[in-house]
Length: 241
Image (cartoon, rainbow, N blue to C red):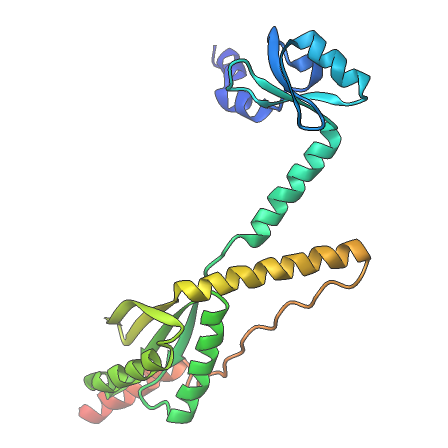
C-alpha cells in the first residue's frame, strides 16, 4: 500500500511540469501572438499550430492562466536560451550584502584606526555592511568609555557613506556596532554592477579577456592573538592572589 501511494507524490508532479509546446497544448482554442508580435486573435489550437509550422517555428504557451491561454509563435530553442541568459544575468546583478567585521582594541592607536576606517569605507562603498568590534582583555573591560570613544570616531569618519544600524552594545568581552551603506551608496553600487555586467558581455561577444574583478580589502592582523587573552587574565588573577 505504501509503495503504491509513493507514485502519486505531488512533489514529483511539480518537478515534471514544463512549458507546453506544440502538440502538448491540448486546449481547444488559444489566443495567438505571431512571431512579429502582432495579435492573431483566438484560434483553434490545431490552426494555430499549423501557422507556427508554416513558419518553421513552435507554438509556445506563454500564459496558461489566461482565458483562453495565450500562446506565441516563436523558436522555442532560442526562447529557452534567452530565458536562461536572463536568469543568469539577474543572479549576477542581485545585490548580495555581506557583513564585514573590523576589529579594534582599546589600545589601537590613531594611525591604525584611520587605516581601518579607510578599509571600512571601501567595504561600505562596495555595498557591504561593516561591524566594528572593540575587544577587551583583562582589566581593559573596566574602562568601556575608551571603546565608546573609538566607535564615535569611526561613526563620524563614515557618516557620509553609512547609517548606524545597531547602536554600540556589549557582547561578552567586546563592544560592537554595525553600520550600513546609505541608499545613495547602494544605488551607485547597483549602477556599477550593471556597468561591469555590460562590459563583461561586451568582452564575451568580442572574444576579449574578461575585465578583472576588483581586489578585496586586506586588513592587517592584530598584534595580539586570541591565545594571549588567557595569559593576560591568568597574570591578573595570579597577581591578585
